[in-house]
Amino acid sequence: MSSETAGPSVRRIFIDKQSPKAYHALIQTAEAVRATAADAGLDRAVVELINLRVSQINGCGYCLDVHTRAALRGGETTRRLGVLAAWRDTELFTPRERAALALAETVTDPSDVAAQESAYDAARQVLTDDQVSAVIWVAITINAFNRVSIMSKHPVRTVPQQ
Image 1 (spheres, one colour):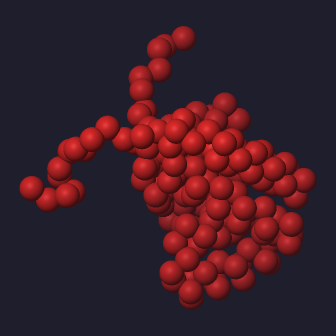
Image 2 (cartoon, one colour; image 1 turned 90 degrees about the horizontal axis):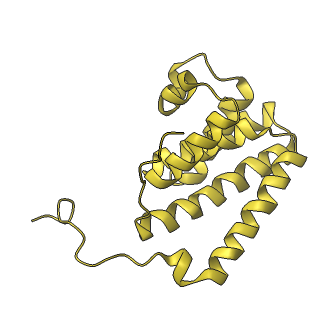
């Protein structure tokens, strides 16, 4: 049986619970990054789009669930969320959102240097220096949370209807 089809052989450790001091430091970082993004003029909708796109790339079901619900609470539309994975093929995102998404993607996979340079150049044309920095920090932070949830195998559970 290949490792891709094999089920888990042992229960995963929820590393956020096992190492709470480290996880708390990550939460404090996320809070500082949210404040940095707000101070830079990035609204919560853009931050949630970044969180979702990075979580899509990383395949983090737990973070996709959390940030989809947050985006919807923040007024994001189901139409835009539904096409986020193919944002380049739509006209639904503003130039600033497009620049932020492209930059966040290169933070998530920095191995393509040409794409990284292109995304950075495009971002510098429509975002301030503070906004570029904030986008990068948002992407770094959600990448870290994705890895915590992926390695812990945090479950996505059914939410009771309200």
